[in-house]
Length: 96
Image (cartoon, rainbow, N blue to C red; front, side):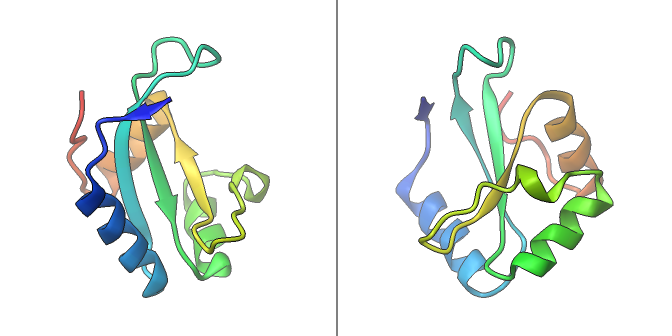
């Protein structure tokens, strides 16, 4: 279940994706399959090759992309992977 997400943040994330940028969106998220994870970061890009290559930099597999027909395909980052990648990208983890 996703929550704590502002409409303005979602619109900005989608705008960046539509412009071919690698876009980050972090929000609160709870799922019993991932105990201890309280947030998820979605990393998307309309240019799927660019997204795949970005993911390879961090050891993310292409099959981990959540392919969406609406054009907002993305990786979901959780836990330690999320923290490590956000730090390497120079993004302060906005939610703790």
